[in-house]
Image (cartoon, rainbow, N blue to C red; front, side, top):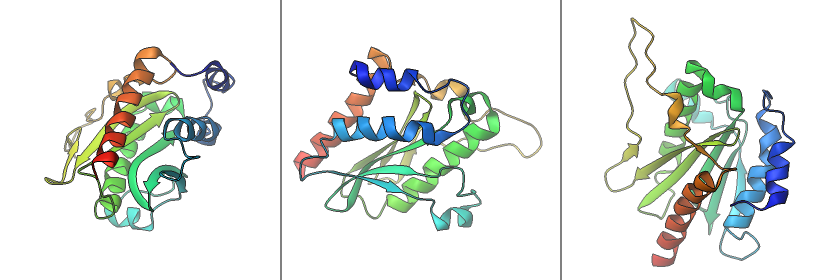
Length: 186
């Protein structure tokens, strides 16, 4: 479970905030703590919008900052943040999914790990993604959108883990431990 000071920091953020940067500090603190950024192994690097995102038809302004955890300047994990209200909006979920996939494409050639994990955070709620480098597959699998009708191809229940709960934090830590294990195996 997260320590109480971090839980208190989450509790101070208004649930109806539309400003994702309200979550930057608390997630930076979590990443710093879980990846022990004070060691010489990992660095937490804020990344700004990707210019190539427009190439894929995805506006790059939706995620102002992505946190990339790096080892020797090579990405080993990343987290993108949106406000909590975006979970309830189909368009926002689709945009978040598209941007996760664009981020994977941009980091594919750079990561030294066989599996690159990424998390889409909407407030405290998390959706887990991973790229298997050998196959190029990204999970969860992409679902094609219909051009003639509205379909919910990125359901709200994808963000099914709340990092402020023991279960959600445990799932987050499973990913962190998987990343650490891959780093140790290099």
